[in-house]
Length: 413
Image (cartoon, rainbow, N blue to C red):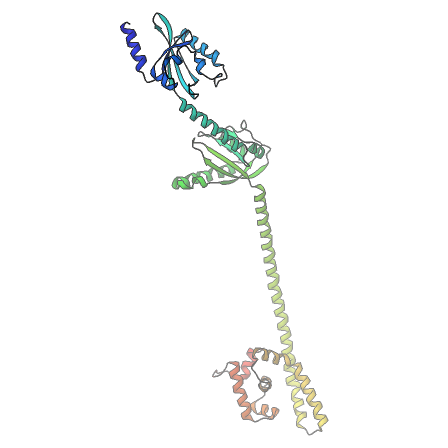
């Protein structure tokens, strides 16, 4: 073995990556790393096999391994090099993904293919897992009960689900990015400016307090493809990729109900105000009616007290038989019933007054002096003064410089 072949053999054996030699489409040699990665007990298990013999029948791209292995080797022999990904099966039955590099080299007077494998099984497993998770995520998004849009980190729309197409009428071809969406969804320039300003203020709030970012949501009126307008609650959620998932919840009916409720509340408030005005006017009318009634009662009472009762008193001074005096008494009592509203008001306001005290108050109200009251009630003047003091105490005017007649005229009208 010459020096070059010895150097080649050392590199071949000591390299950490699996290395194999292929001649006439079959493995003719391999290093220890290749045996380990293929779970071989010895070289004799691998030598003499073709690459497709340690591979699944079909590669992930759909090509038969038995056809493709010859093709990639021919390319390496023709161009000198070739590289590609290949799926193998170890002798233990495990999947082995490799990044294969083929180099045509002279070996013992022949041109053979120097093959290097780099194990990328873990990377492929992660890719497949990510692909599965992505498919699962997309299935969830597509079947979500709300309109949903996927936006990448650059603002480009990557996906819209069926619900979004039903909600807005737009497809991904109509709305390629966020800028187009703003123009289409908010055609009114002033409203669009309001939306942008609200978004700007929100970004500023989130810059000051990042913890609020995931709780953000907006409610805007968007214009659909058919020019109809819908109220949408928009909830963006950041994604690890740097983009975000944007959900649209149609709250048009809810907002209409809310507006209807506000309108009804406004109408109810207007009616309530009108009823308050009517009530106030009615109170004024009732007071006026009460004042007129009271004025009439007072007028009647005053006229009877001045024009009628004095003459009855004179009649009672005369000497008449019992029947005549009984008639006079009946007439007097009936007349006093006419002026009873004053007495009723007095007794309802001061229920502690006795009958005698009520009689004295009535006579005082009619301008009678103590002597006249004593004569009318056939009691002594001292008894009248005793009752007057009790009346002042019950009316709450003891030790006050106000006459009983003045108080009665002012307070009990």
